[in-house]
Length: 204
View 1 (cartoon, rainbow, N blue to C red):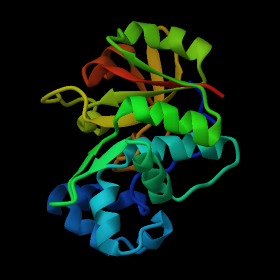
View 2 (cartoon, rainbow, N blue to C red):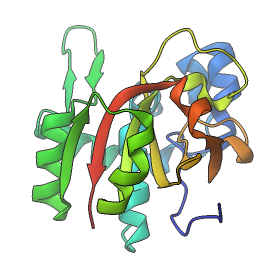
View 3 (tube, rainbow, N blue to C red):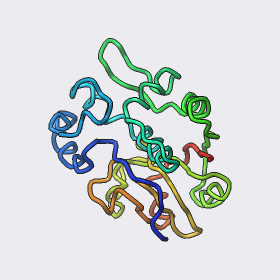
View 4 (cartoon, one colour):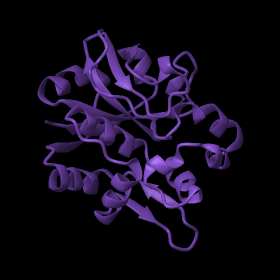
């Protein structure tokens, strides 16, 4: 598959923060020199949100493909106002992305057609992309290492930009190096080992 023309954005402002984060936890993001670009007011706020905004990074890429650049946390805060994220005021934990409010959010704020899809067989993704421009797919985050066996499916979101009967191409907001970030191409069968059979189709 050829490279896509969709810009890549990591869910961290400095894309090579993935391995430090995996080693040290969210505290590693306090060293991200570009954290202010996220739209966060403090580095603590950035670190708390960045581990939850893979879906917003996917949306940022979709919007960038049509020439709009939005800070990731600006998108997250706006999506939260629709119920796409739920913040626990007591402990600051963040739950989301919740698909149904997200679909409403992108439709009302950005005029994007979107539809939640569940119980999707991986072999139907090429057909989905024949009708929709993008598919935000729920996968296990260890998809950055496709030759490993994931402990589960789901828990992370990637932006699928193309699919054929035998292969799929996607941007991974938490990839740890260039080849696991932008325009990753995997056989459908390999992708399926991480795929939770659900996601959100996005139109123009």
